[in-house]
Amino acid sequence: MSNVQFLALDVSLSCTGLAVMSMTDENKFVLHSKNSIVVPQKKNKTRFDRKYDIYLLFKYYLDQYKDVLKFAVFENYAFGAKGQLLDLAEVSALYKLALTEVAIPFDVLPPKSSKLIVAGHGGASKQDVARALPNFLVNYADFDFNSLDETDAIANGIAYSLKMIQEIAK
Image (tube, rainbow, N blue to C red; front, side, top):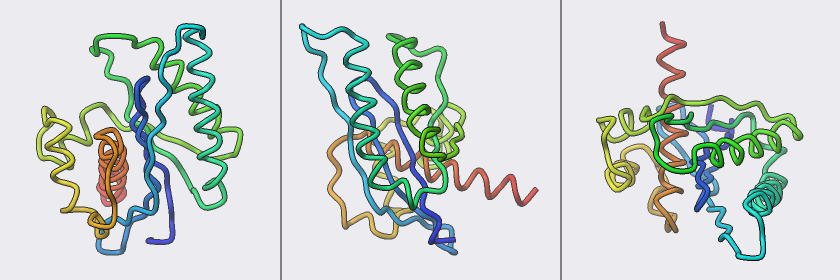
């Protein structure tokens, strides 16, 4: 299974974490690439202009991996979240549009699933999740992480994969 590469995302308006990963036959994971998409809000641009810039950066990143990616996974919306939920939904829709344009299927992971599966409890902090990643990633030490959004993206990929293995085993 280690040759199946997939994209895991942790979507945010301020910083979206991206991780290209694969799973080993021992149910461990290999991180092939990770990145962050950060587009600050500028006074002379509308909120949609910022979202469009995020979309263009994602398309650029996706273009580098579209030939090897088999699927993508997002954490689904936490509807109890405070803040700009509609803006987050619009950005997520643009990510999904970009994936659809290059025929990469995607799925969503229930909110807090990655925290529960990777860190052991649904209320885990981003730091707790990051600290748990060496238990799952065989090449964790090969990377320096720029944000907790990158580590959350990796956790989303791990949780989704392990959850799918459980579903298949049923």
